[in-house]
Length: 97
Image (cartoon, rainbow, N blue to C red; front, side):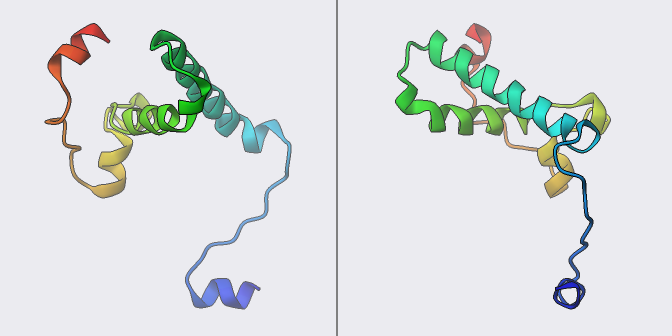
């Protein structure tokens, strides 16, 4: 298996499962996303049927917000080396939000 990883330039690292040190940040971010999705669905009086669409919208939005951890850059900017396009955002919706 390691030969296959090396052949395709894949870095392989073992980690301990179910440890706070390994999973704490990911678990926190997951809970954060779930809380926002839940509040969006309640605020919009939407059914749980739209949970997936709400989750996609939340992650899309989070990836376009500046983060102090990334020196006030967006995750989108760090990943793609360009600023995200904000022209599609309706100013009225932003003021209400």
